[in-house]
Length: 345
Image 1 (spheres, one colour):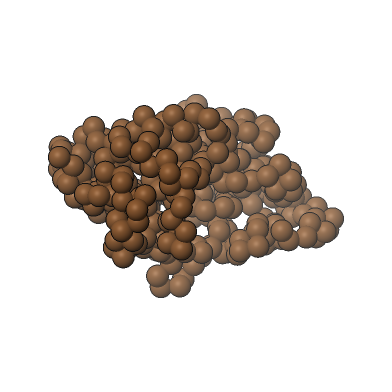
Image 2: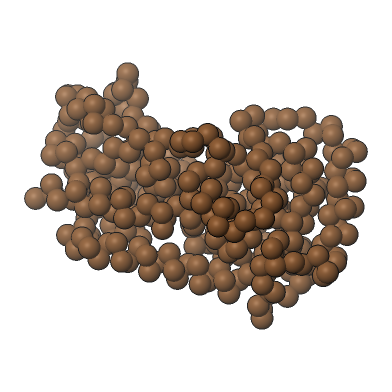
């Protein structure tokens, strides 16, 4: 974690500038903030979340986001952030953005955002230097210390209940409200839901199949397997795609509030109720699972109902649903799931 010593000087100056900007309606230009706030979004506006209560004094103009993908909500709503977290995987052209974000920024035009390098944690000084009116992190793993530090820079919106577990609808609702764009946020949700329904309608046999999401399989040690629980957004996304949660995964998830668990491979008999397994990997990894004396006993593994996603691919990145990624790759993802479901007798 980077040092917080800079806060004594830099943040005090930046906060003064940011508060001045927040209080000035004259800076609310269409290029920076889109249309005026709809009825119901009146400022000052208060947002309650897991790490506190945030009051945003005026409709934000300069928007910064931290942590993975939080910039996608403002971008989807026509607002280009002044700064956002640099993509650290699936960035095929090395420009610091995933393709759906890059395309949207080009479409909207305006100033190019500052990219925050979060390899060693949040770069608080870089965030402060963008002089934001608000900092969005509704899908994140902010600690209380992170939140307290960011709040010295600008009003900060954290996750509603649990770190890294905000469903995409709640994520959009929380951040669109903070931007004074609640109505537009609701419309965005409806649009994404429509796109998903269009794709799953192409594969009626997919409906009702059960699915689990394994984490990265350690091919050097298949004596255990890890999976995302029902608290993780990857597993929750299955419901949007017409799939169900296997009772075995629901039972194992009920004993924890963690987003992932590891279980001995000797317990593979529990997974007899799983129709489809999604995981990160490739065809060779699936072959190793099928050759393993324990994992090969899982029916989904036996018949090849495994969707192996290359984690650095666009589909792999978008298996964790985000506002811009879902429309970008949902067709490809649903097709892969349907192919796996077709092997279920």
